[in-house]
Length: 253
Image 1 (cartoon, rainbow, N blue to C red):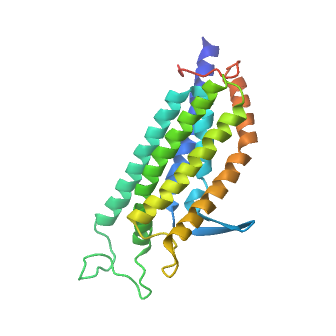
Image 2: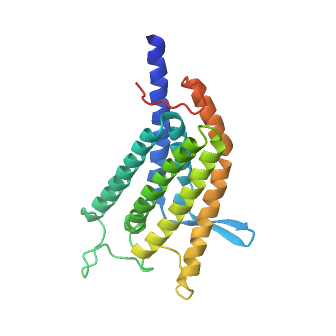
Image 3: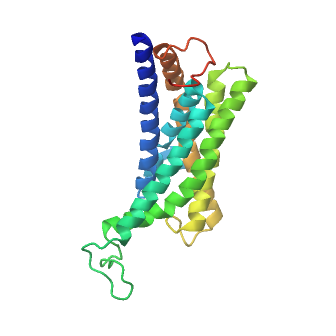
């Protein structure tokens, strides 16, 4: 009985760690969002420019793939829904923080905090503007991409009868990352003005460049996580006593 209790405790703890890493990365994505763009250099003729909030995002696909492999599609889908609730919670707090009275000097014409000489709002309101402008887009992209990842992962798993772990890991992630990158850029452009676009240049090529840059970064991250994914799944199978390839933990208890 003691041995079974310890095994269940390990399974619960492993799931909590992966879930915490997933949700923490989602929180960073929404809070940092488009607050800064990073130039990662050139990949051939293509510049690789990504928003700082994107940096932890590939980890979310690694977490859902590991959870899908070990705990199954149902638990991975549950985590995706919890991630959506986290997005809504962040949006609520950011909105609430902006409507409650503070100590900022208000513009008598608008009743909003006054901008400084450079036209910038107080730090929180600048961050709030960027956060609200991206969370709505990220929620649409998030649901589409994460459920695409989970569904494709298990479709590949059924098709290959539990073999070729690398195929379902990379195949599901690379497709879902393209869906995510395209959706978040397009919805952000349509819903707000926070993208770094040059007004004097055509919009579509700039949007295409942002999508390509973001996808190149996520594509390379997806390829780079193949070995860690193999190692983590193999280690968890031993640690959680799951002896057979393709077998899942249907329940924790």
